[in-house]
Image (cartoon, rainbow, N blue to C red; front, side, top):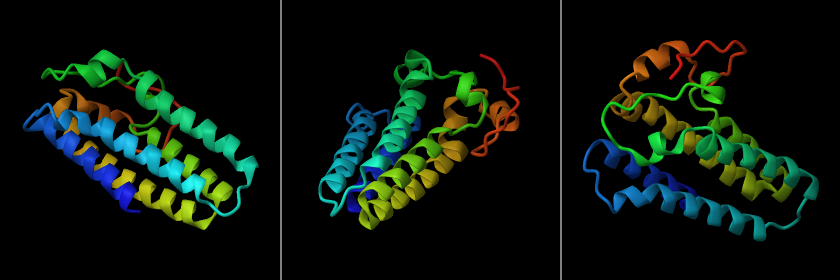
Length: 172
């Protein structure tokens, strides 16, 4: 649990740094938090008592969707590299369905890992998913409105977590 908490504390610091200090060291905290979370998840998987292999397939699938959603469904330069004021929200593809689709992929991946590895992994995964919910709520209310000039319009048009069928998001 401490590993998950540490990872999300680093995410929070990373995001706060984006709107305040813009310190070069803190800009590495997203990567560091992700590395800690990944290594912690692997460690939990290696120490599980019994492994139900069938649940690893959907877990890998959902982790793949998470990676795609966070790093490939967004235009990389504008989202992760360019910190210039005046950035606009990307509302295409999956980000026109709900504002934080990665939440679901992480939750589903951890539930599948919990079913594969047992109760310790399930508790860890649900705890990390809860921390993720707090994190994306913080991003949605505090960070993104200050980073993206059109985030208010995006919030009015695209639901927070519950996906919708019809895509009528603002276009970039």
